[in-house]
Length: 49
View: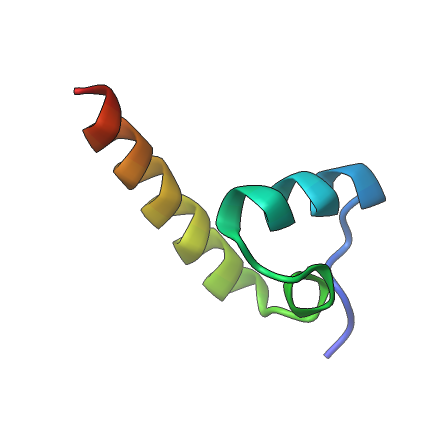
């Protein structure tokens, strides 16, 4: 599996937002990353409500 095709800046932002080490993020399958992003967004929406 090849690393995600995202910029270094994007990878750093996602790493901080999701609390995942950068090297794990870059080698994470895309479908798992998308699921984690959806989960983080859902949690943020609940905090704002």
